[in-house]
Image 1 (cartoon, helix red, strand yellow):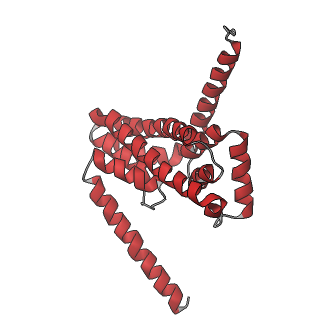
Image 2: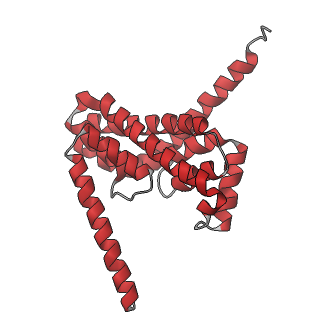
Image 3: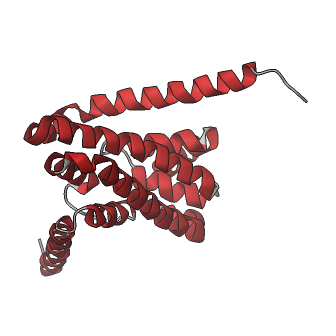
Length: 211
């Protein structure tokens, strides 16, 4: 690695270290801290561990505050996604330039097929699912902010409720459970949300037209 590479890695390490210190400070703030951590994480500011681990930790420490912890994380994440969405909206397809053509085609097909479902899946799915690509693309391809907001709120609410429940129920074992089982859990959640949406559509179509 050349001198430039060492300098680049050194600067990257300083930035990541500073962000980790910021996260540790925000953790001391409790519920306001999880709001800010979720906002920064969803706005593409890299924080080690992310909101899931913080929701789990706070719910373990203060299970009676579980509803407030989850609400703060959901609202913070939604606002962060709206920031990313606005960047995509302002930049158009140029905002997606750093992604490969294959990924851009893939995300456009998903959004064209069903934008709401694409957003819900993105915020529920575990890494390495390209969540931030989907949110940026929602802005770039002119998905309405209302639809994006509904999708993020629904997906994050389910995701953080699960993390909070695991923390409150299993304590220090919850992190290992979430790490090992989250792909399976997220798949079950995605299927559940999909079935809920389908059932609502079927019920609407089954209702008689009163006009």
